[in-house]
Image (cartoon, rainbow, N blue to C red; front, side, top):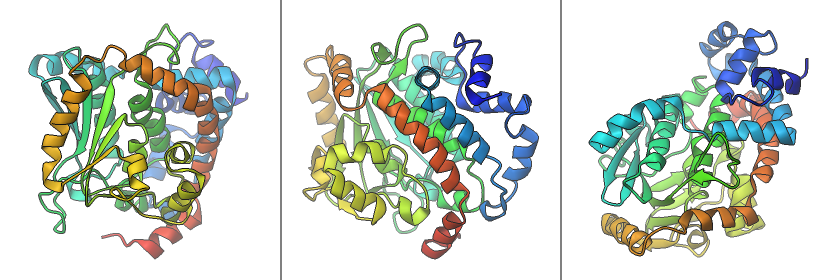
Length: 371
C-alpha cells in the first residue's frame, strides 16, 4: 500500500485531520512505518549509533506532501489549534498568563507577549520546548483580548551572557549530538508553530489560504538569532533588533537544512546573500545594510522595552482591522500554501537523509564539542 492510500485510510478520505506525529504512529501500528517500540529503542541511542529507521517516515511524508490534495490537507491539519491549547485556554483567559516548558505567555495591554525560554542552552529549541511553544502560539492567537503578539527570548544562564536576554541559539546541538531529537521534530516545528507565525490558525471547515485566525507578530532580537531562531524572523511582521545583535544560519556546519529559510530568505536579502548565509556561514549583523533588510528597526541595546511598547502602540493605535487581510494578500503573492507544500515535500525527504547522515556527526564533532 502506498503512502497516499494509507493517508486516505487514516484520514477517512480526508474527513479527519491527523497531525504528523499521530499519522506516523498509526502508520507504524499498520506495519507500514517503524513502530513506537522500535522508535523507542532507537531513541535511546546517540545520533552516531542510530540505524536511521526514521528515514522511512521522511519518505512517507514526502510522498504525501508531494501530492497536492493530500499535501494541502496535511498542511491544514498542522495549522489547527492543538488539543492542549484548547484545554489550556480557559486558565490562560482567566489569569492572563501561563507558563509551559520552553515558553511563557503573558497578556500585556494590547499585546500577548510570548517569551521563549531554555536558559541553560541559550534558549535553544529541542524536544522539551516544542509542545510548549506551539501551545503558547495557539493561545496568543486565540486570545480575544489582545490585538498583536510579541516574541522575545528570556534571560539565560550561560556565564558569558548570564542574566541577559537572548533571542535564541537555534537547535540544541547537545541534544542533537546525543540523539535526543527525533526526525519528526523538524516537521512538527516547521509545519506547526513556525507556520502558524506566518499563516495564523486554520479553521476546520475552511481553507487556511482564505480564512484564518491571525495577528501581527513583533519580534525583539537581543543578543543573537542563530539557526532556527533566525528562521523564525522570516515569518514576523515587524522585527526590532538591538544594535549589537546578529543573525546566522549555520546549517551547513551542522549538517542539516535550515527549515524554510531556503524558501524565505531570498525574499529578504536576495539569492546571493541567502546562499552565502546558508551555505557559507555568512554572519549578518542586524545593524548592517543586509541586516536591515530583515530587521525593520535597530535600537540601542538598553532601549528594547521602550521600543516594543512604541511598536505595539504604532501597530494598534489606529486599530488592526485590516491586518489579517493584508497578511493574506502578501502571502498570496509571495508564498501561497501550495508553494509551501511543494517546498516541504522536498524538505521532508532531504532533512531525513541529512539527520542520519555520517556528515552530520562529522560536522558536529569538527565544529562543536558536546559539553
